[in-house]
Image (tube, rainbow, N blue to C red; front, top):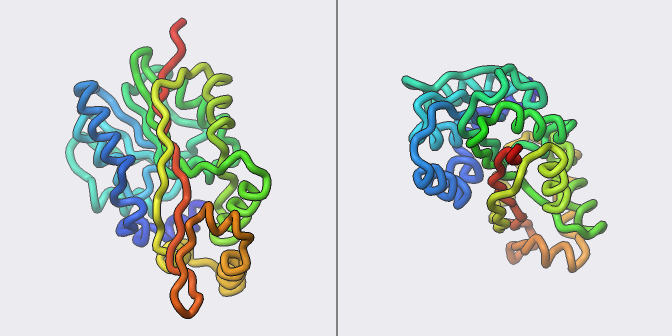
Length: 251
C-alpha cells in the first residue's frame, strides 16, 4: 500500500476531489466556531489538504500518513512552522493518550483493513473536550448497490477495502465510546476519466470498470447519476460521502 500511494502522490496533490470540497469548507467553519486548539492530527493526510485547513485553527498540527511519497507531497504543499509530518499506520497511532484537540481523517478509511481499530485509536488520542471529523465514501444499505459500488472501487483501486454504510459507522462509533455530534451525507460529482486515471489501474481492470458502468442495472445508473457522451462513453458519476463529527463519551 505504501508504494501504491507514493506512486500516485502527485495526482492526489492536484485532484479536484481532494483539493477542494464542501466538506473542507464545513471543517474550516466548524473549527473556526470552536476557537483555536493546541494540537491537531490529520490521519491519512495524503497530499495534506486537510492538514492545511486545520493548521489555521491549531497551533501544532501533525500530518500523518502511511506513505512517505504522500508525506513528501504534503511537505511541498503545506510545510511550514507548526506542521509536522509523521509516517505510520492509522490503526496503530504512535501518540500518547488524550493529546489531540482535533483529529481529522478525510476520504481514507475505506482503505483501512480494520477500520474499527482506527476508530478506537481516534478515541484514545482525543482530549476529553476534543472532536474528530471523519469523512468517507458511504454506500446505501441495499445489497445490490453496496456490492456493485465496492466491487467497482476495488477493481479501480486494489488498496480499496470497503466503503461502509452510515449505520455501520454509527455502530463503530458507539462501540468505541464516541458520541455522534453531527452527521451530514452529501453527494460528490467525479469526472470519470480523471477518477479512473488517478489510481493507474491495469488495462484489464480499466476496461472492466468501464464495462461494469456501461452495463449497469438501471437502479445503479440512477443512483450514481451516470453521465454519458453521445458516443456512449462514461463522462462522470456521483457518489455519496458522509461527514461525522464525534467526541469522547462523557465518563
